[in-house]
Structure formats: C-alpha cells, structure tokens
Image 1 (tube, rainbow, N blue to C red):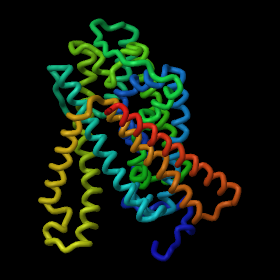
Image 2 (cartoon, rainbow, N blue to C red; image 1 turned 90 degrees about the horizontal axis):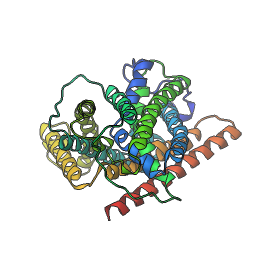
Image 3 (cartoon, helix red, strand yellow; image 1 turned 90 degrees about the vertical axis):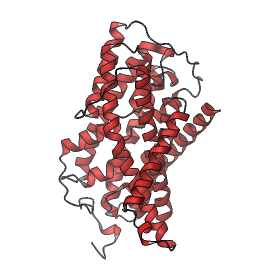
Amino acid sequence: MEGQTLGSRGLSEKPAATSPGLSSLGAVFILLKSALGAGLLNFPWAFHKAGGVAPAFLVELVSLVFLISGLVILAYAASVSGQATYQGVVGGLCGPAIGKLCEACFIINLLMISVAFLRVIGDQLEKCKYLYWSGGILGTLAACYLALVIMVQYYTGPQGLVREPRPEPSPWTSGFSLCPASVFQCHEAAVSIYCSMRNQSLSHWALVSVLSLLGCCLVYSLTGLYGFLTFRTDVSADILMSYPGNDGVIIVARVLFAVSIVTVYPIVLFLGRSVMQDFWRRSCCQVCVPRALADPSGLGVRMSLTVLWVAMTLAMALLLPDLGEIIGIIGGISSFFIFIFPGLCLICAISTEPIGPRFKCCLEVWGVVSVLVGTFIFGQSTVAAVLELF
C-alpha cells in the first residue's frame, strides 16, 4: 500500500504476499521438515557434551522459549514491514546495513547446511556398502523413524557397537555446549511460510509455531536421550556411525535419512543461489558490465554459481573432520536468525507501532535480551569451533 507508514499497519493486516493459501497443518509440517535436519544425528553427542540428561533438558527447555518467541516476532515483523522474505523483513525494519549482514549470514548458513548434508551422506556411504535411494519419502518420516529406531536399540542392546571414546566435558561450561545443537533450523523459512498461509493472524501463527516446535522438541529429545543412554561417553558426533554397518534396521534409517537429504540439498542450493543472484544484480548495477553478465537469471550466471556452490560444499565436507564441528558452526550462525535478527526487528518494529509505554518497554527489554543471548551463543560456538580445529 503506497503512502502508508509502517506504524499505521495493524497486526491483523496481511503482509504483501502472492496467493496465500497454505493450510495450518501444512505450515506445521513444513516447519517440522525445516527443523528436522542433520542436527538430529548430532543430538545424542550434544547430550554428552552438555554433561548428561538433566543439563541437556534444561538448556533445551530454555531454548524452546526463545525459539517460539523468535517465530512469533518474525510474523509480527512481517506484518509491520509488509515484506514476504526473511532478509526483506530485516532490511526493511533494521536498515540496509543490517539487511546486507542478514544476506551474508543467510548464504553462509545455507552453505554450511549443504556441507552438513554432504557429510552425512558420506558417513552413511562409508558405513553401509549397500546404501541405495528412492524418491517420495518425507524427511519428517525419516526423522521419526530414526528416533523410534534409537529408542528400540536402547532396549534391545545391539551387539558389535563401534566405540569412539570422547573426553569428559568441562563441568562449568558443559551445559552451554548444547546451545548450538538445540537451535532448531526453521526460522529462516518462517516469514515465507507465514506469508503463504490463509490465516495470517498472529495468535493463529503462535499456535502453529508452538505445535511445530513441540513436535520437533519431542523427536529431538527422544533421539538425544536414548542415543546418549545407549552409548554414554562413546557416542559419535553422528549417532548412526555408532551402530554396526550390517544391522538391517539401521540400514533402513540410513537410507531414509540419505533420501531426505538428497531431496533437500537442491532446495538449499536454490535458496542460497537466489541470494547470491540478488547480490550479483546489485553489484552489476554499480559497475559497467556486459548485459549478458548483468542478468543474474542468465544460464551462464546460474551455472557458474551452481558449480561454485557444489564445489565449495564438497571441499568443505571433505576438509571438516566430523559432523559435530559443522553443526557447531551452523548453530552459531543460526543464532543470528533465531535470536539476534528477531530481537532487532522487534525493537525496530515497536518503535513504529502505537503501543502503551509499559508494554513497549517490556518488548524492548525482551528484544535486547534476545540479542544478548544470540550474541553469547554465537561467541561460545565460534570459540568452541576454533578450539576444535586447532
């Protein structure tokens, strides 16, 4: 709506979106699919690093509050800004400088997710010589099956387990090491999902967010708990690598997870390439380049960016030692999308809305707390990743 200020947009007004029609159930499953990724394989190891079951559950419950809050804030920010993408919302509310930082983090995060996908596929191929793949299988099904298998294996006591001894975690920092792994990856797609829904009321989106993250938390918790209890300090960074390669039930789990990753990798590549194309378009506008190169949708540009993306992710997947370090890096970068950017968006959005001073102060404090928590998680995970490498 041209000529309308940000402050005059009500919460019930829909952001600019084309043909919204996604059902609530569809939104729940899409959010679940976004969150149930390669980090699930790393969760039992994260329980070990957190120092056991009790501190792991405590960190997970605290994180859940911020995860739900971040999704609700992003929907509110989308309704205020009128934007339909995550980076558009951040750039529209927080300014072009923060918007460019968001785009850079978006590319790096998607790049590392692609690396994690390739690393998982490589691990399963190394462990199972008979791995095959077929289409039509949902990632949510693969994650639920994995959780169920790990629970059953705990009670049946599988033989021939692979042992990879790990040092005991430091007692005073142990609980914080779960933070990077406990930030479920669904916030990057939250704005697009919200803007595609038929019912875009904030209360309805809050219900969708709670249901999605509770389901995600259940699957992650069961996987982490039973995987950790089965192997204790011998748990691998990729839980499937702790099981023998000739177990039929585990082979099926590897197949399902590999299929899920094979089908998601092109989507992640497409999202990352689209952000790179936007950057390419803006860069070409500032310098004189041939028309064929200035068009980011051209075949040559798209092929070059795709080859570059695949080559970089393959090289990094081969160079990085294990999945745990990759997940740590992803968790650190994701703190921007889950804590820092939503906190900044909340602070900027309420400055344009007619809100009572007391409630406004509470929202500002929550925004500041969210930014500080995200900064801490980013710093902690970055330092931990650097120490692991050296």
